[in-house]
Each structure stands twice: as C-alpha cells, then as structure tokens.
Length: 266
Image 1 (spheres, rainbow, N blue to C red):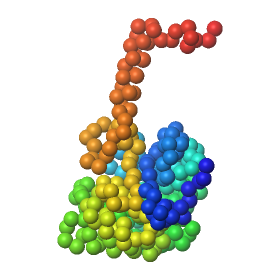
Image 2 (tube, rainbow, N blue to C red; image 1 turned 180 degrees about the vertical axis):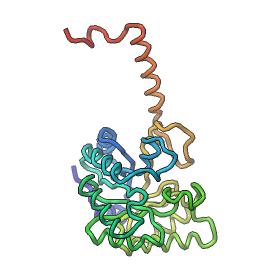
Image 3 (cartoon, one colour; image 1 turned 30 degrees about the vertical axis):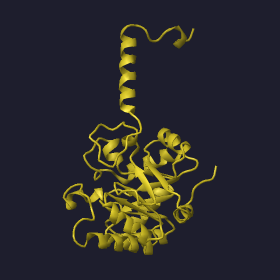
Image 4 (cartoon, one colour; image 1 turned 135 degrees about the horizontal axis):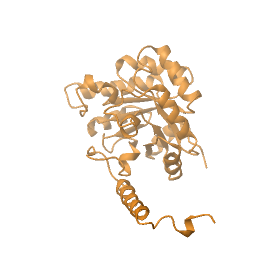
C-alpha cells in the first residue's frame, strides 16, 4: 500500500484525479476511512463542534489538537494526515506559529498543518514551510473568524471579493502552500481559483470545480444531528442505527434477554 505524500497531490491535479479528504477524530474512524481509500485525513478543529459539543471552534486548544491527531495517526496506513492549527496557535507571531506547527508534527504525528488565511498570514505560511513543515492554506469562509465575518456566510459574491480570493490563493501558493482548502465560496469563484494555481484545491461547500472535496465524517455518515448545510451529502444514517441498537439493548437488559448463556463464561 503506497503512502501518499505531499508531492502526490500536485500529480493528481495534473492528471485530473480528484482528491478525497475527510475528517477523523479517533483511531477507529481513521482506520475505517483510510482502508476505504480516502487520500487525506484531516483532524479538524471542527472537533469542537462535532466531538465537544461547542457552538464554534474557538475554544479548541493546541493540546487537544495534538491529542486527537496522535490517536488518529495510529489508525492510518495510506492516507496523508493533516491537522488543523487552532485559534491563537499561529495568530500571535510567526515564531509561535512555527512552534505550534512543529508540535503537531513532533507530538501529534501530523504530516502537514492547515491554517485559516487572510492577507495577514501569508508570511506565516512561508515561515512554517521554510521550517520544513508542509502547509495547507484555508481560504474563503474561515470559522475561526466567525465573529468578524458576521456569521457563516457564502464568500465571493461581494464586489471585488472574488478577485481578492484568487489573489490570496496565488499568494499562498507563492508562499509555499502545497494545497488550498476553499470553504463556502461561490462555485464560479472556486473554479477561477482552481484554474489560477498549480497546487490542488479542495472544496467544502464550494462546488464541483475544485480538485477535490472534504466533508466532516460525522455529517457524511449521518451521525451529527441536523440541520445540515446544503453542501453536505449524507451517505448513511448512523445515528438511527445507534439509536435503534441501543433501544434493543436496553429492552433486552430490562427483560433479561441479555446476556444469554452464549454471552457468559462458565
């Protein structure tokens, strides 16, 4: 089984092969999605929402990201492992950013880091990758900036916004990012971005023209309670399976139907 490296993804773009990325937060799910053929496993700071039950991602700490990245790494063989840099792990200074990114690799066993980018952090991308740490640049809707953005809004529709996003993607590429994640951007704008850079783009809520796609695994398998964003496609109803199985288990325990002889040691 060939391990995927950062250099493989540009080749995939050049050859027209789409990139499949998905989030994971523990070794069990990581092993399942890795064996199923995903190309990139992202340990997202979305764990604040889907694992910790928080309203947003702002409270997630670097130590928590390191912990989840480390346990995800134990379940993987083929996919590339990318970890999010949480809020305030890179914003204070490029020096702090390099140290935080280094910890995600040294302690968490990540193979690259992702950080949310505006013009102020392009140099941070450069500094991190010059330290030998591969960087994924996240542009468009940046959840860590939810308060300054005024909520979770589609990006690219205001005058001049599309040009700024294209320029930002180019700047990230020039700074050394090997991949760009585009979140909640108009599909036509995402197409322009994808065609403007040589590095691959991975979209979430940004249409079909990106070089790949990413979804939160809990959303994809139907584990997260709704409502779901428009861009989510549910491939299963795992929440229903868990609920029905648990009801049956409770019923069996209450009625003395579990455990039976075959479940006991004699």
